Image (cartoon, rainbow, N blue to C red; front, side, top):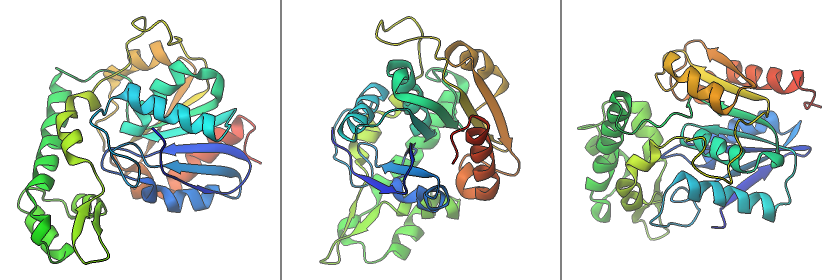
Length: 274
């Protein structure tokens, strides 16, 4: 699939993959800070933003979408960064195409398969609530974003989460609304989003990956836990973990200055930042 993307800056390519329900717009402020040093590329993942919709929404499919982006843009020795779903996609890419990357940055997600685990069931229930709430919105008769927010508040208490989700509500030129998200595909593939990496199951995947890797965890988030250390070491043994104080799952949005410092220090220590 050919993905929509935004691009800014020059230098070493830095590709940033957003998370579930997100889009490239979410990373524009971070991209502006990094653009003096890097050629920052921000794709919209399949079924998100301005990229095409498809009924398949697996990490293998998303990995190949990114592989096509790399091929079309002739990217080599790139830094790949991903948040949440984008972070797991980045890891799937790294084990299949390690020769394309110089560094890997994984934001608040671990490589573990969470399906059929207590933590995974909790995440799946949260996602199910979100997707069902969005599907229930009568967007054909919707008059305003404020009306949509009031309706969502009945099932989604957090205002920042609602605001994040409603960025996907697009107003057409005739005043009507549509979703940028492919909610049907996401609803049918929620368990796939909880999938993980399985060393030894795919002969085309190369384990372990020896690319220098930075894992970034939000202090208040539960997406990377102590029990994930084994899966991280099995897949990416040359990795370090940095915890951002006062941040939850949306680390880059909640503590952008700390986030940028950690990312820049990691890259600078590996002699890429110019």
